[in-house]
Length: 601
Image 1 (cartoon, one colour):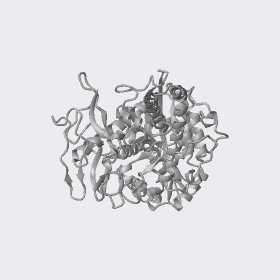
Image 2: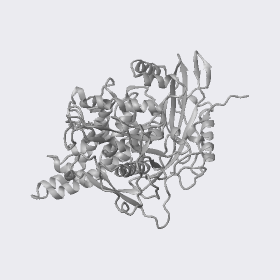
Image 3: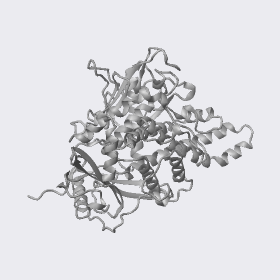
Image 4: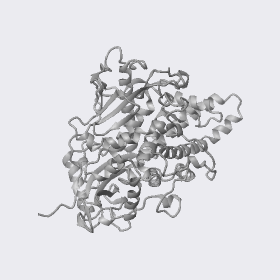
């Protein structure tokens, strides 16, 4: 019997797929729920509370919706707190008043922030986000939210339990701010933390192999990306942005209100003065020196290294903000008493800009390799993704990102220079025919291109792509012939996903794409090594980009081996077992943050 050249991954084979509620005629558009915009430690004069419009869906007690199920269980005893009913007459309208003592408010807030984070990804991607296959494998493929899971100095996304898990701690005698010494501090009441953990889950759904810590940037990227999502989601609150600009002497984005993450949790122990993390705001001219301790360094603890990524993106945002508001600032400088009007205009610009950059970094994931990502490759993905959507770039968003990454010492391998042309991913060197069966004219949908399709159609798409990439074209897609040779065992390549999307450009032009992943692993010296590629097709089924990580790249494998030699045991175990423990990796990603945070982690 002939051995298969490839197989379909779980993402294509699984039936379970949580689908957002589809509004019917007469349904409301949103459900308004009150939330803390940051956390309970923030003054109401800094915009601490806001009314958040959440996509409407019929929900049961919990809340229990189509995507998320809030199950407020206290793990040590198994006690389940009474669930909130958003349709209760005392709740319906704007939801419960923010409270640190009522568990039902925490249930309301975690649901609201998770839902709006999901919706933000959906808007940016031009398709429905997916949860990881390990989550969808469960009888109930929805993500469970556990607001008060245990007394633990942590919060984390647990893929194997399909949950967002939030701990709580007692503040120490060294706590600061509005936190009473000895009082409980709940991570589920920190807007940044809820958005951060939801971003982890959504990133894992987009690129499950990005959890494999094969180089110093991988876990740092997961943390930095989730921090960026949390930070930029905060800019949707007008009063917070306005107060941040008023708090800044130069009406720029350097205010602590806009740059601190999880302030209350961070100030609950230790020196009691710092937020959990704060953006390294070191804005300057492109060639101005950045302090050595703030530069990219692969030996940094991964939260500290992720902070460099956050700093680079935030500097780019700040630079574009200054450029776009230069004229209105000059006009305001000539008009005494115009500061209030200036703040209003700057607030609107800052909110719009943060939303645009959030779209850019989320869309960039579609142009990242399936595994072994570096910060430099993420920059290339950002530049390519934005170029596809906005070729002209009139305000220099991409230039600002390139200059900021360079200033913080983030290098880009395999490019001759940092010009936009050099950074863009290139089309395949060899001309390839359109893939019959994957043009938009031949695809079958349930509703529209950005929606999930049937299992049969997913399998058909995967089979068409598998036949194409394994038909003598291996070297272009980062994979090799399966089998044993030269002391190595090459596993069968896996078609992980074939996703369709539809995006609207700022010029109101529709852009259709197919984004797919093929992965493979090879075992050498009792350790698995991973390769493969992200494949982007245009609407005709032609290969537009192949973003690959070659399975036969011995230099890359040597670098991975060198990194793992000094890495945590959980990291090495992920490459030495057939089924790696995703939950252990995510807990490891998070567990060190509190011990290192005083140095910016």
